[in-house]
Length: 468
Image (cartoon, rainbow, N blue to C red; front, side, top):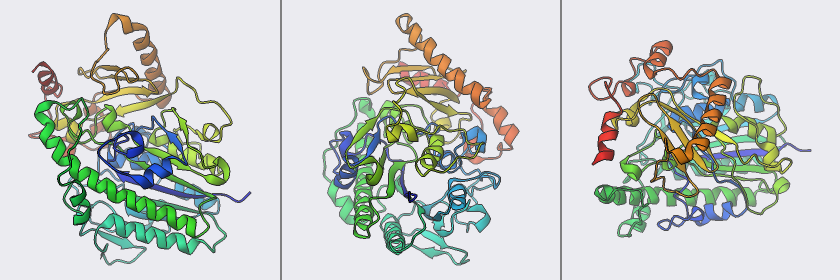
């Protein structure tokens, strides 16, 4: 059997709830909705460590953050880790990467290499290369091509230009015999929310935005303003998805290509009063995950409730391609569930982990945490007071914390046992964040220091906010 091609496309900070097929009334995403109607939809896919660099490293290596070391943003990934591209290359695949990379890191701890060229030995096996470390100026975004030392600039809005380059790559593959892996990484809908073509901004300029019920009234105006730009970026992404799907169809590649659409993490947009990501609530951790493979899976929508996490992507995709995962991979292979060979485990869980508070989570007064997300429940624990238990079926907006309630004792104990299974299997001792910063040599990282240095009581601000 001919090995399938693999096209893996992911956005930056696109939460699962912010798409038409997912029920968001504020946005039209006809191309993504059409894809959803033809795909396996992991309805509880999560980003267990919901930040850019940790997600990318987990996708690339199949390891959890303490396994690959990227549990603080902008840490460089080590060359000793085997990536999905290197494994597939060894199985006869051509490999390509376009867009935001963000695992070359900045060892200075202050973003010093975000504009640097990434050497070939740090591209983890990707041959075709039009990528950059990190840039959020979407109208003046740069990239490096192959081994060329010159920094180039994407023409216009970078998501559109990157998609056009991906389509050019796909057209060139239509006459080739070898299978390929193409990864396309967009920087949007991550803020800023004004840097895009005016046509997209105009679509949402005067639109009434319906907020999620868990957005506090005092945060509503800011949430609506930011969401207009967020949805505008998302509309552009939808157009890009349409271009990719059309190119696959027009060049005879669609049938035997595994096409994945997902995101690295979500965005709170003032749900629970919080901004950005980092935190264990669903707006931050839940991501879209659509997988289409017409030749093998057909063209009908099928939902899987299994909580798929970033470390599971490499072994699952390798499994679908008929390629064995390296022994050091820590994630789970869900390809049998996707193929329909085994029934999903209704009690399966994903591991939520934030070993060190940094960036927005530190600035907003929340500590390190560990937890699990099942198809129904969210359970989170921290030695500094972040204790959560939600029944997401009865309480989809996570507005009633059940932690510690006597009537929920059995379920809480069951979820604690599942958490302990992850901690034991991964050798995670759940130590204070400062211990990991010292052990890995990350104490100088700007994001891990917070405003005015480390916080003496990082949970205090959140507790006070709940009392108001």
